[in-house]
Image (cartoon, rainbow, N blue to C red; front, side, top):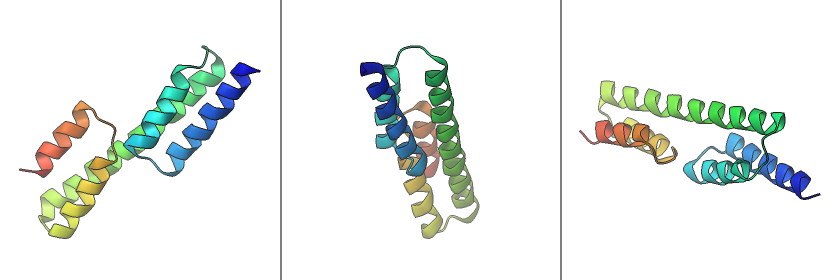
Length: 101
């Protein structure tokens, strides 16, 4: 069944994003979700994807705030790494601009 295979693939890519969140794993999971038909399961997958993205964004913001308070090279490196994991977005751009001030 084509839908079953698409659903299985989407869940696999979503789990990969949850285990190792990055812009690449986010894009792959999002693309897989986009081809699924509208179902309750797709909605659950989308909620999981957004939840993972929120966790990633909070982590990046926290690391940036730590760098802004300390201005140490170590905290700069940690913040940059975390921000780079975000998919391209306004938030990512804003965080990078703050990091580079």
